[in-house]
Image 1 (spheres, rainbow, N blue to C red):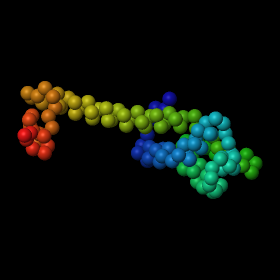
Image 2 (image 1 turned 180 degrees about the horizontal axis):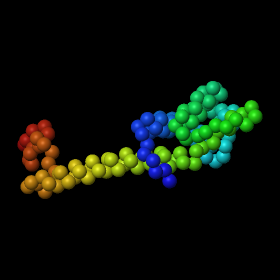
Image 3 (image 1 turned 135 degrees about the horizontal axis):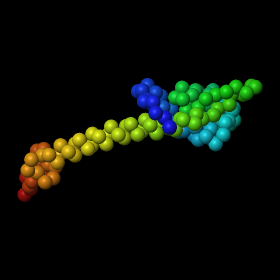
Image 4 (image 1 turned 90 degrees about the vertical axis):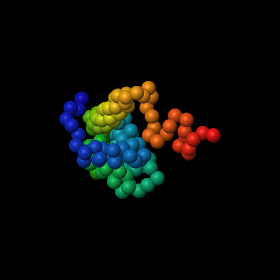
Length: 132
């Protein structure tokens, strides 16, 4: 389990890497087993260099690592990569849940109201004006 706190730069790199369909697919393929960059490139309608760039983005985010084996570079996933992504999402969820809970408490503390009221809208009025 990942215990250390992720800084903003790390989270930005992580989500940037995961924001692209091709990179997510490369990550899925490498989870099944290590693959060479040239083997990965065969699966996409783009140049070898473009696939190398995608792998480099994943590597900077810490999602994969490369190891040279002869003339090939083998790509493998980092076993803790999914844990880091999950941690980042959990931290965001916790922050938003806290905000929503605070808003709910503030609305519940509103004196004399059973339900939250939208400012500027009276009980028999619509946003466009009074009902006729």
